[in-house]
Image (tube, rainbow, N blue to C red; front, side):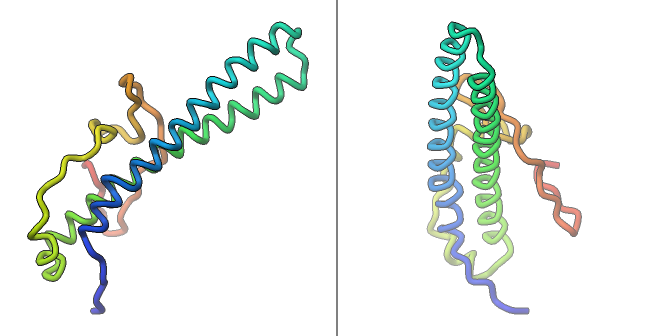
Length: 143
């Protein structure tokens, strides 16, 4: 069997820092869009809800929904990277040696509810995400 050269420390860093940072950035973009759509909706109502503005609001709403899904997917990717690093730690001798000096780092607050797929907002709400990946060998995280 060939050798897979992956540094588990880098995977863990990507899963606990880099990917969650991108998820947070996308969440801010989504919130800015949501706020802008609220203002546009008020202006549209004052203008008698012309078709063009209603159509623009629908497009904005669709984009917002996709941004929310992206945030959830990014958070799931972060969890998957951490789980992969932990799996390497337990199964690969070279990875074990690289992992020995690491101290366990807590996962970011976004991962406080791993039983529910997707992101968790600061107000405790849930953002739906893509379904969990299913391993061909039957392993399914969280079950």
